[in-house]
Every structure is written in C-alpha cells, then in structure tokens.
Amino acid sequence: MVITYPRSERTARARSAADRLAADGIDAVVFGWVDNAGITRVKSVPLARLGHAAEYGVGAVPCFDRSLVDDSFAAAPSGAGPVGDLRLVPDLDRLVPLAAQPGWAWAPADLRAQDGAPHPGCQRGFARRAVEAVEERGFSVKAGIEVEWVVADATGAPATLGPAYGMTRFVELSDYLREVLRALTDQGLTVLQLHPEYAEGQFEVSVATEGPVEAADTTMLVRHTVRAVSARHGLRVSYAPLFTEGSVGNGSHLHLSLWRQGRNLVHGGPGRHGLHPDAEQFLAGVLAELPALLALGAPAVASYLRLVPSHFAGAFRCWGLENREAALRLITGSAGQANAEFKCFDAAANPYLVVGGVLAAGLAGLDAGLPLPPETPSDPASVGSAERLPASLPEAIAAYEKSALLRQALGAGLYEAVLAVRQAEAELFAGRTDADVLEAVRWRY
Image 1: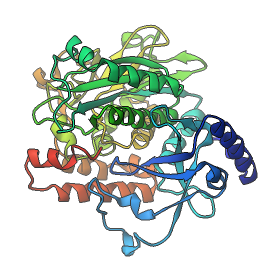
Image 2: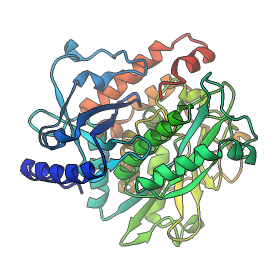
Image 3: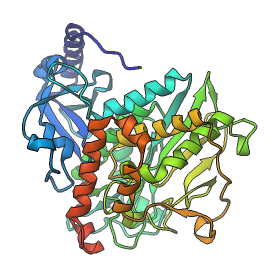
Image 4: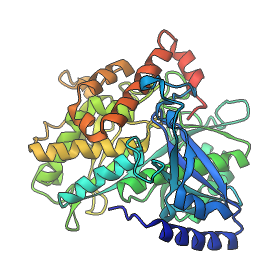
C-alpha cells in the first residue's frame, strides 16, 4: 500500500533528503516517467527546488498521455491535448544518486492533477492500484524485469561481434561491463546476473525481485544507468524490440511469483510442477488475457518483428516447464526462486502498464477459478495445437478492444489513451518495410 504524506511532511522529508544529497555532491534531481508509447521522459530541478517539487510537483503537459514513438501525438478528445497541466510528483522513497552521472540524483514520479489528486492516466498509479487489489485478496507478488540491450559504437554498428554468450564479448567490453555492475551496485541494486546475450552486441542484466511497482521503477533506473555508463565509454544503447532485421530482439521478460502468508505459491503445491491451486488460476488468467495484454507489453509495430517463432520470444499462447519458446515459462527451484516468466513482452513497453495489466488478469483468473490449460512440453512451433499470439500490432489492438477486463482495470481515460496511441502508431508505420520500421525506432527506446 502506498503511503501518502501530507504536503508539509513531504516538504520536510524532501529537505532532509536534499541535505543528504548535498553532502554527496548532488546538484540536481531528475524525475522520470514512461509514456504510453514506452518512451522514458524526464524533467529535472536544482536540488534547492526538491522541497517545492515534492509539495507542488513539476509541470507536465497532458498531451504526453498520447505521445507516439516519433514525438508526434495521437488526436485527443475535443482537440484538448495542449490544454491544461499535470504535476510530476517525485517518489522520495526511491530517490537515489546516479553513480554514472556525478552531481545528479533520480526518482520516479507520479502524475497528479493540479490539486494533488491522482491523474487517471498515470501508469504508475494504475500499477499501484493493481498491487493494492492483490493485497486486498490476501496475496502479495514478487517481480523482476530483465533488461536486454544492444551496445553499439559511434557508427551505430554492434560494439562487439563475438559469439552469443561468448567470452570474446566479455573480454572486449570487460571495463564497460565492470562499470555497469559497479554503478548498479552503488545505487543499491542487487545484481543477479550480467552476461552477453544472443544477438550481436547484446547483453542482459537481471536484479533481485521486489514488489511489482518497485520492479518497474528499478527497470527505469537500470536502463538509465546502462545508457549513462555507455555514453561515458563512447557507446550507444538500443532497447528497441529488434536491432537487426531477422535477429533475436530485446525482450523485457517479466518474472513473477504469487505469495500468501510468506509462502511462494509457485513452489511446493499439489499441482503440476509444484504449483498451488491459486497460482494455477492466477497464471491461467494471464494466459487467457495474453493476446490483449500484448497491446501493453508488445506495444510497437517493431515488437512483432521480434515476436516470431524460434527466436526465444514466446510467440505462442502456452506454458511449459523451462520452455523458452512458450509465452509463459515456468521456472522451478527452491521456494525463494520458483517463478513464472512471461517472455512475450519487450523493451518498448511501459513497465507499469505491463505489471498492472498482468496482475489484473491474474486476479480475474483467481476470481473465475480458471483452470490452467495442458502444458506444452516441447517447442510449440512443432505442435499443431499451439495458438499463435497476435503477429502484428493491429491484431493485438483488436484483442485489446475486446477486453472488458483491461478496460475496467485501466479506467476509461487510460484505456482510451493507450488505444489511441496504438492505433496512431499502427497507422504511422502502415506500408513501411521492416527495414524502414527498424531504422525509425532503433534509437528511440
């Protein structure tokens, strides 16, 4: 549950935080949020203004609810997009000095109305409401989001061409990766793995699980940090769903476990592979809603250049134990490690929309007592009965428009804003070649 502090108390907490940051040589604080197109936007204030920002927020234009990947805008109702103002209010509990940007600190921000009321279109607020709904039913969720990226040189070519998972990549970029690890650790994050991935120039980092909103915050911080470290080494970073045509793309896999009274319900139960009945119903709910959820988790035209069979992308609506081609991969292990991995989401997604949507779908599965369908124990591409997930953004939009569940969970304003952005981006890239699409978005995420 989020703790809402009175304005006077927020100001006092901000001033205390500012004193600590000043002692660390911090000059300014950057506030980050993610729009419905998956673009991370920022505003910043000098450290002396942190108290004022915590009390009154910083101005944000409402039309960013409908901003597209190319910085154009989907049409707003009544043409009111440029009219009005919102306030970005920093979450002081996540305030952290940026190790790779000396003199700067960072905090995620909530979008609020001018009177301080929550903005209905705030994606972070949506994720928080979903968490509260889970907790009201006596459950909790631990989550983590993998971060994959391609690192390129100044010309835009992959910075290392060594083999997938190869030592060559690690040696060639050893100093760079060491600085990434140090920066993340210095910012209080627990790094679990850091390694070369499959595509040329691709790497992955995963960090310890936490609450769903916190996991989405951390994903923003990790990506911000990797980009900053890369810039210090003269390198560029792409989180686009696909960097090179025909290759493996950048996933943003969501790992999730459902808990009750300190027990992991993905482990030690009477069901298949140790699942408890509640976990089975929760996962069944997500699988049932997965085509519509792709409008949140695979939100770009380029997402469907990644989401293809035999590319480790989870292109089929099915589940399986350690099945890396299924959209839902069940991972077993100890009670602290067992979890479900959703592989079909990518790095163009707003992480708050993803975790909020998945939680809402899981709760619907619990409420309906949905049975988990039969397991797919092999490559679903070789199984005639395996259902292909939407293969294009228009197909995902069609599934989204049919989802009464997501309409209710998101609320009318946020639901319609997401829909407008998806429709506008589908129109924006209609008729373009795959190569043109990749060229247009490669450096946008």
